[in-house]
Image 1 (cartoon, rainbow, N blue to C red):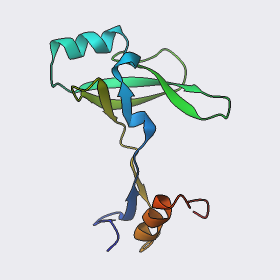
Image 2 (image 1 turned 90 degrees about the horizontal axis):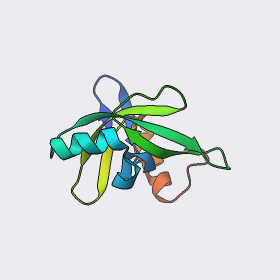
Image 3 (image 1 turned 30 degrees about the vertical axis):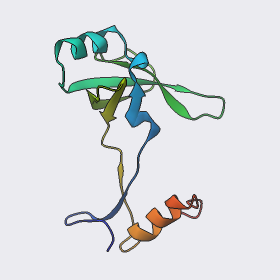
Image 4 (image 1 turned 180 degrees about the horizontal axis):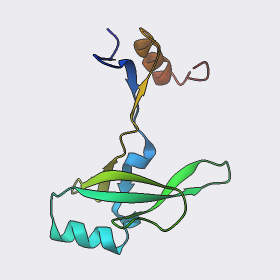
Length: 115
């Protein structure tokens, strides 16, 4: 059975590289928050930087909204293993009915170019 949302239809879920960030990319505001609130959740802003191929990667993560640049807003929490997980709500894509399972299988095989 395809993954299905009762109101919006079939979807696929993806894991984005930007959802798992090393603690070394946190700025002072995020470090201080996590130091004070162990196990807490924080609204963060992930400032992105494009590489030579034009692909964006997380440069820094802050508790303060950037004044400029490309960034994503999300909810972050620490895992206790030198990583921060960030939920941007970008991990679910709705697809044509009954196509979700086929697309997930193609992704597993690295064959998403057709989609």
